[in-house]
Amino acid sequence: MNLDGLQIADHLFRREAGRMVSSLVRVLGMRHLALAEDAVQDALVRALETWKFGRMAENPAAWLMRAARNRAIDLLRRQAHLDHLAPQMILALETAHAESGPDGGEHAIADDELRLMFSCCDPELTRPAQVAVILKYLCGFSVREIAQAFLSSEVAVEKQLFRSRRALEARGELLEVRDADQVRARLPAVRNAIYLLFNEGYHGAHPQHVVREDLCYEAMRLGALLSDLPAAAVPETHALLALFCFLAARLAARVDDDGNLLLLADQDRRRWDRGLIEEGLRRLDLSARGEVLTAWHVEAAIAARHAAAGTFEATDWTSIRELYDVLLQLRPTPVVALNRAIAVGMAEGPEAGLKALADIDDRERLVRYPFFPAAMAEFELRAGRTERAAELLRAALTLARNHAEEDVLKRKLEACIDGRSA
Amino acid sequence: MAAFMLIFRNSNPLERSPEQMQQDMQKWIAWFDGLTKAGVYKGQAAPLEPAGKVVRGSRKTVSDGPYAEAKDLVGGYAIVEAKDLEAAVEVARGCPAYERDGVVEVRPVRVM
Image 1 (tube, rainbow over the protein chains, first blue to last red):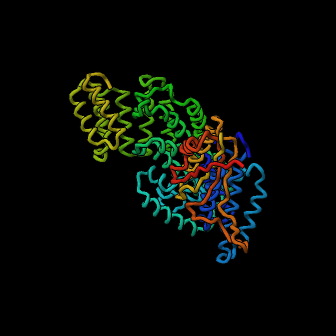
Image 2 (cartoon, chains in turn yellow, purple):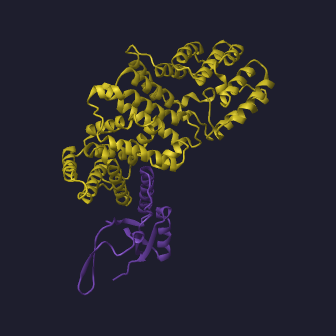
């Protein structure tokens, strides 16, 4: 015990929860996922009730892991009459204990987390369900926190997690991440889940941005873990991580001091995280060492162009426009088409932009998307047609999905009416 | 100055997320930290294990567990110094326990 141990790392409990569940499940098998979860919850309560008196263990992570294993042993003893394998598992937990040593077995735990991560991306689970179980078991999120992050009800999340847990428990075995073939087969699903997780945090229409940023950082942590696994450290994985780095670099600049959402054009670029941009460039470089070109590669390259521009005016729109041409081939969605049209307008002038917007193939799918009329308004304004721009912004306002979007559009409308360029 | 024992009766056993638990813990640590800096608290405190034994009667019967409902269970104690009971109650009012329906009992330690 340490008297000065009043400093505690951010999200320590949450992070350790995921690590402990992973480690217990490796020893006990997937069929004991629920037991592992209970043991971890009890270990955290025990830590809280002990450490709150102002003295933390010198190595909190190792203390927690020991408490979770002991609790799991207790729970197994209680059900020993139902489970003839219980004595074996108790022995395995005691051995794991002895083997992990004083540092808690850092390296082994990373492998445990990867095993659980790959196992959670089970083809029997839908993609959103995969993300939910990852948040629950690997990231230590509660049902309520997951519901908040996905703007879903707690009951719905609870049900989904219950079904998913049953499916995972039925699998019994964990996916072996030291087997390169197994890793390669499931890698796309794992990357997709991590991408969805990040996206939900970055683009999800959620008013509480704090919860959302946490999702981004969790996705980045899992992504970094993934890229430490040799069979997973392939160009596509690096491309995904590069994209995360460039986007996350802007997180702090996305809201102003009053909590208003700021669009790319209005952000204070001095607040962009240089360290993350550097890391993004390093990952982008690693992503280019192969034959494959994925949408993530292109998205990361676009984000890198933005990161390279000292001001919005200095943006290299011509090359961004070219990259969007490629992205539209790889991912032909209306939103990509919209962003491409904006790049066209920025590179070639407002009339070209308006034409590109009008030419979007399935533009009827954008009718409920506020940034479609907002983009038109921007180009009308740049073309000097203020009245028309204001009209479009009013239309955009009626489509806003949350207060943050509403505020952004209101400010644009006010600036438009005042005759300033927004 | 007199000594007072703050007895912490169990807080809300409702399920909390790991993040909430950490935040709760940090509030408690900050509270004790503040009391230490104010010279009110000298490090005399301890959590109590929930499970134990009770010995009772002339036959010294031993039974399991503390003599309390789960919600009244004593989770720990701390000794603080204060001018009088009122001041000690003021100290107890600053405790983060109430956010989780916790109860703090303030008892003057009798001088022998």
